[in-house]
Picture (spheres, rainbow, N blue to C red):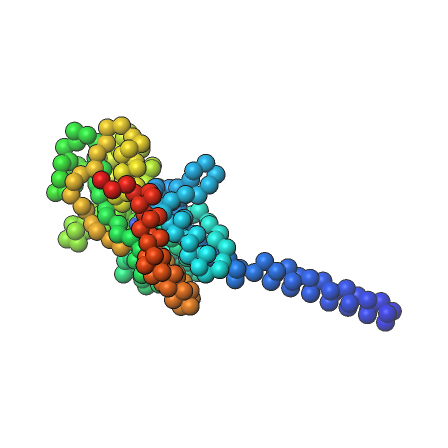
Length: 255
Ligand code: GLN
């Protein structure tokens, strides 16, 4: 009986060791887990089965400098900040605008690009300038949880149009489809995706005036100050040696 117990103990001990080994074997230390929303060309989008875009290429370069393997998780835009905050993802890289509200939840790296919010309308639309967006019958389409959504649905006193005038969609493409179908009168969205969507759909145009000018940066968990420092170092090197400019130039052709 005693011998049996010994064997059993041994078996249990080995099993526990194996479990431990399994847990620490593929350590996430070697990975940089990036959350994005790959429906935001030219920053992130799918090319068949592959991820492509400015943020993807930039993330590859950063991961390389950090000596980590890049792992990409494609999620809804609105769950990126909370996922980084909870530690589910190491970073959020998604053409993400730095805002004071988000800064309460995550840290932001130094900015790596400027984002501009623009307005897409149908050609021949009665909406010809930004003032016309405030019209009583105007319905504005936005991508859920983006700055376009947050600012446009704010009160008129705060520079928005009020929630009743804003319809959120899960992604920018859905908002643009609604514009094409006529269920919204305008779409407020970041400039470069706007250009891609306008190029892909007949009869749309972008209003000349800029609706908002913003900084894009990488969201990082507040506790991970080492990662913040490492990423800022990588970004400054990638800026200094022209890598970031080259990546952006590859996807955004100068007009
Ligand atoms: N720049 C916008 C924001 O941060 C939209 C980003 C996105 O849709 N990927 O809210």
